[in-house]
Length: 82
Length: 261
Image (cartoon, rainbow over all chains, first blue to last red; front, side, top):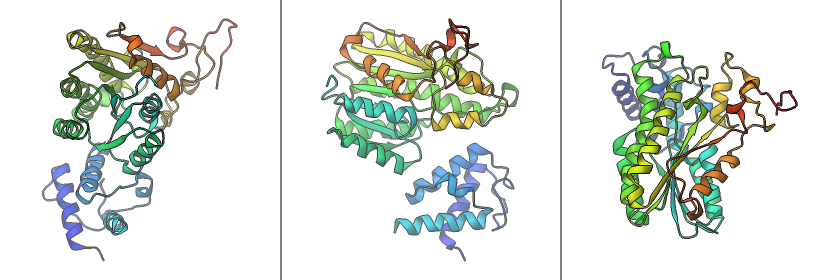
């Protein structure tokens, strides 16, 4: 179960950067499904880091399979910050 | 310590070559501001290392590819330090693709961070150097030699070097010395991204007539020299730091052998 406000914010950031207002932001979706290239992903990560003042570790992201996992990861980083 | 009391900014200063340059300037007594893009923990760690040398350290997060972030960074420097004596344009990025596979976004990303940022930062830095100062750009051999998948970075570094020469002349009346250093492959995290590409001729990256790869410390020493008063008659030059590699790209040595570190 993910935090609805985090999911909403992350979705808004992804939509803004990949410029696809109607993308299907399901837990199973991947950045590849959104046709996000490597620069898009970097910009998405930076925007999320800026918004929540967290640090996303690229190595840790290697274990994330989809948006569901990504949201859970972002929430864990927000929780770590306290 | 020859840079005691000076205030230095190193873009991309939290890791790799930038970190070593920041530490070298701190060794020489300068207070050091490091700009970083994403790794806050690395920036904090580098700041701790700088402070341990008895000087001030400050980290500012900014993507130097974005003009408004550059403005915010210099606003913060102005309010926190009041002036700047040394500006090291080190931050760099790139998309490793051959020319025919480069899209507009990748090109702009690379040029904005590697070349345009030097112009925008230099414009702001110069205003914080009322009594003169030093600027050093960090380039690479890709500016003049063709390397696989290095197209956008190589072109951006060529622009960076040309801009270094223009700034050197235009800022000379303000007593601001502008120079650059151009290094061959340096063993850093960034290089690992390129070394993973199987098309790269790995032995060539690791071979120099001097018998070893260039280390970040080799670059930091030259950058430090270019920040000293003693080097003030060097203007608009790009100092090549490559152990002789660019003069002998096949790895030829007087003994006729190849070195590999």
